[in-house]
Length: 188
Image (cartoon, rainbow, N blue to C red):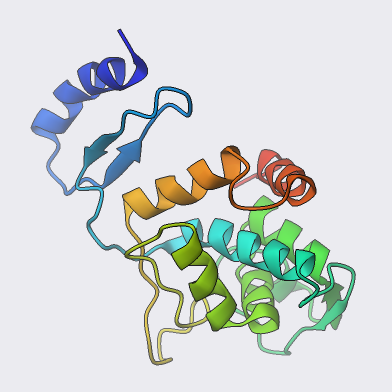
């Protein structure tokens, strides 16, 4: 019995009586048989979008469009929600490398917005398209509900992003190791 069959069997009782809407996508990296349920339903991405933002930033750094050690100016007004940078107004700038780490390890929204500002929405959109994401958009900064545009994703796109990263198809080998190392230290 393969991964997909075992997963379907274990989830069937949960799905049968689940009162909400489910968006689920998973597959074994070797077997490649997907298990999908509402996987293409568009939802608000919340912090799941941060993996795509990290990959986009590491691609920009690899291509020379951004420097990982470059210091990024932080605004006085910082995004709320998760993170530590909003609690540290005396810190005026942080390296892109450290912003990526804060964005992933402690899910820092202010760090995420600084990374978005550094690489730009177009870079993120291009990366999403290249990773095969069909329903993922990042059109505004985190916690900026008054801004035009919207952020959206679906379970299938999130699985595609993680699949491409895990199989070394999202980034060059050194950047893949860096991204996986940062993800391994995630605390939230």
